[in-house]
Amino acid sequence: MEKISISTKGNNDIIDITSQVKKVVKKANTKEGVCLVFSSGSTCGLTMIENESGLVRDFKNFLYKLVPVEGDYEHNKIDDNGHAHLLSSLFRPSLSLPVINGDLVLGQWQQIVFIDFDNRPRKREIIVLVK
Image (cartoon, rainbow, N blue to C red; front, side, top):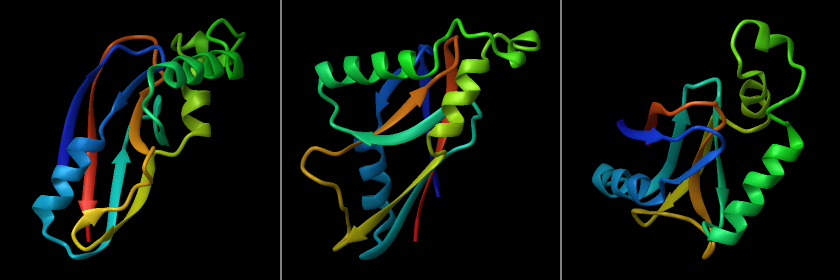
């Protein structure tokens, strides 16, 4: 098990963590198995996307339209990030990916991305477990 530490800007910040996850897989020296990528935050998520700048902008715009920041959320009475919790509930906190011949298996245009839905910069930890 390894931890990846990242700093985010918040506000649907999308960070490609593919290279860091691949390094953990190589270091684990597992020939065939599964790589679990997990984030414990309740205002973030993991997904796979082509990390192309236009598509990243499209994805951020989609997130803002799907769950607008300025919505009337009950949670905002406690913390002003109700939208972030709702988005986090729609995205997985983890991904399970195959490891074959010692390599992480990804499609040609697939990258692993971490998304911080919160409304402020954060330090985040992502757990990567290879078995």
